[in-house]
Image (tube, rainbow, N blue to C red; front, side, top):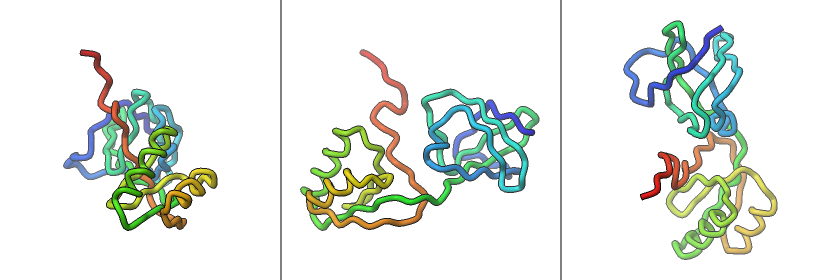
Amino acid sequence: MLEVYERLGTHCHREAGQVVVLTHEQRDKGRLKLTSESGEEVRVFLERGKPLLVGEYLKSACGQYIRVEGAVEEVAHASCDDWHTFARACYHLGNRHTKVEVGERWLRIKPDHVLEEMLALLGLVISHEQTVFVPESGAYSHGHHHH
């Protein structure tokens, strides 16, 4: 069993001995019990509140390097042709504190029939796809400081 207490970021120049494939929900947690792609048990004990990144490297207590990959999961994909409609959609999702992956006049959210209906009423075209979900980390993801 590998125990992980250390994050190395996404620019590690070492070869990973293990790979773990995680959903967005799993990457959001600081404590995890996982199985790597090769079948090795991996236990993760990291700072809470700082999601793991797709492509991030971890280092186990015994010195092994582990790469985090994103799992393919179902998402709702919403798109439109104009920026005003897109901006309104992003505003309404943000107002509901929804995790959103943002592209150029497209966005992805976890499937939710109420939110999908709202987006359709705003004029976006909704479809479902299987892909790695990588939402925006949020305004205070690097720590919130009062000045």
